[in-house]
Image (cartoon, rainbow over all chains, first blue to last red; front, side, top):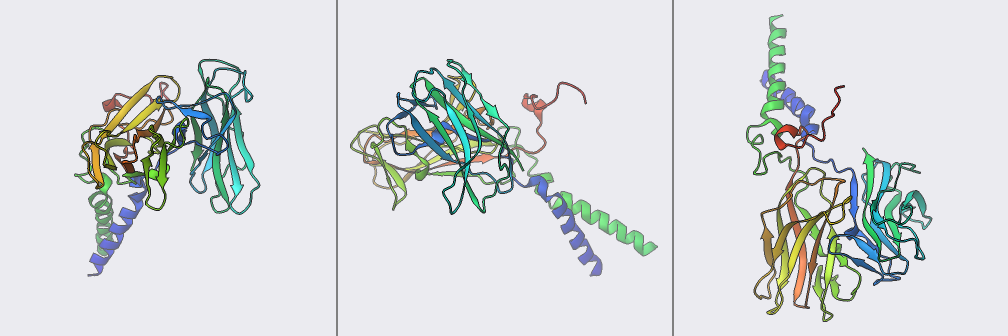
Length: 166
Length: 205
């Protein structure tokens, strides 16, 4: 009986020892597609979601937002914007993206990292930054989201990618 | 001494059985790859349920759809169009194998199609429709529609973005949810069988 108990206990230990191998979850990087971005309500028809999966402007500045659901304790390593900046001739000349955090009970936003396209081109630009402020995710005290600004019909926003480590 | 040796044998056998016999990763049934040929199902969080609340306007006709918040569905309006989209957050290296849609199609003139799409983040025009489920006929009840043949099922991040779209051409078309079923890749990617060796270094350490 005693041997059987030892057997069961040690077998359970063996199972526990390998359990992390089959635990699910490797989701970094977080790719926030253009389809996730919502308008702030000031210009609800000032953008267009193209059937090819990107957002473009209509000539006036527009601000779009998406929630960033990052794991507790993760460390943000970089922010990358995938966008086409077809013109500088608009009130907002570049396509801009930021990752921001706000205390859950306050309205004092702080920018963790920001990137922007550079110069007019018909090619996709991938501005990236790994200069992160307050990079460790603290979901107990902060909320996180992404903001993207653009303007012209030749500004095309494809995705914002947040790379992080756990 | 004899007793100690016996104990050691028991402990070792138990550890082996615990790791091999009881653990799903090494069981015979889990070792059988699914139809895609190179992924194992570790359970994970499949299915991914995309509620109607995740959909938003495509922008140029913001009042062409209406989210019924007290019932949790989105429907078209008299302002025909109603094209909406939602992001799809799948785990890296997941394998999508089915898409299911719950909708009411009580419209004798229009049907609706829900499309799962992936789009390259670095190449314009590199767009693939992965799955498509269309309504048909006309009925007042919620019905389910599916596509169990998924094109380009491997979730490649950050190379691609994933999203679903649909157009609700009338008030009689109501979307309740989209559900994506997927398996997750094993930790040990058999890159050679899959043919994608990009994860392997070209330089010996």
